[in-house]
Image 1: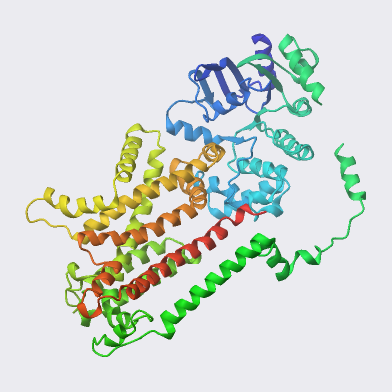
Image 2: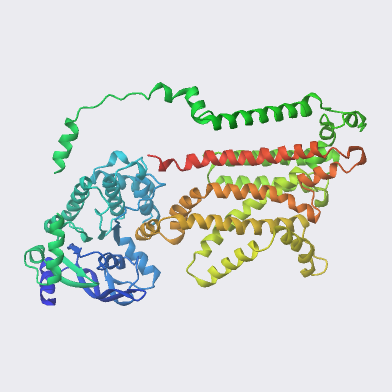
Length: 261
Length: 376
């Protein structure tokens, strides 16, 4: 198992240092063991899709990477910086890691443009005009520049999620985390968000994406990670995971989600 | 799949919009729906209309038709001859200066009068959103300092007037304005502190809120006025008004803190997480994301508390400070004017009402304005 892991990791990017290293990470919510000895190395520019049944710990896993949740055992390194109680290190990491949430979490009292420029202006100390130009560039890239003066509540779910992606990109992150970005969307809006994510993947962004969109996983993932009950059960290329699942747990999961589609 | 849905929508014939039936719109429909929707509501409408008209007619008769507006040289005989069938507004005409300015020296009344105008001007300017920028803080500091100079005097050729002689409406405005201007920022800090992860800060904030909220304002004013000076070294004396002012600030701060905390509590966790994920610092997150949303949510209870405290300033009468209500009460102690309390209290009540109603109306407008983003 770990052999294939290493082969894949080295095949994806040979010389670059890893973007993210998780080493035997454990986490409990009270007495509930939600992450069990999770180890995962993500190379720079690699696209990883994490899937698994609900409650398998996949959201918790990526929320640990920018410390929205704190892990209790093991080590997490992002861009070579270890996550700890060191606030300075955390600031450095969060600046380089963008996140897109299931429920968009746009700031409802700010316009779309202000949502996108707030962090570049105050965290990156970018001049306002430059931040606005950058925001318009990314809003154009996610194909909603004409909505810049509106408030989030005036947009559809799919549009809001694309704004959320643009907002994260405005910080020019090295890594993007997606936490079930299409799960709260109506079916007809899922495609527009996935298209945006595919084009992002094509640009070579390092991405970790928790999703049930298997079509997306086949299309862009370098590697698919299957989690169940807090541990990584199987990991491999989309072909390996979807065509030749090794474990009963993965087979069961695939049969369930494929039935749903 | 999605293509099919799109085509189907495009092909569907569009129905022309129709206006609602005529019986559902207009004044007549409104009257029928709201006042005469059945025999019971018709009956209640008629009964209430009768009561309102009778009461209004009675008030007009007492307050305007039969009223005496002024009397010569404190000769209240004309008023007494009314035997209660008309109002004696002469008491207000005669005593309005005392009600507004208390025992402030008569020839210096223009100073507190100017202060009242300055306060109102400050409220009006602060209420306009286009003036909401950093400079407004300096305007506040400048105007409040100017009010201090005007009230105390002793410089620029203004005779010195000790604080014991201040009184009337200007005292009410001083206590309420300074009180809320200091209590509000204090409340925000306490509310944030109560949600802090640092145990010491949290404990201090909880203790403060629970202690202050647990005692009546009157006892706090007593403590400030009677007990507090006992702890001060001999000869040191802090102004009585200042002590009452601090008690009011602390008291209002505790109540407002809980209102603000309610707003913080109501914000979805995702807003905090999104701000964290973007790398915003604690104060950036609080200042740009959390407080603007939390305070908008609690405008109604905030204004409720503001209005309550505006009126609660009248409790300072128990420690001998002459606010608007106490000045009004004192104005009718004189034997010649005894028995005309209703007229004075109606006037004082009307002054309170104007301020409170303005606050209430303004907050409704503000609420609609600031929550515009929630409309689709």
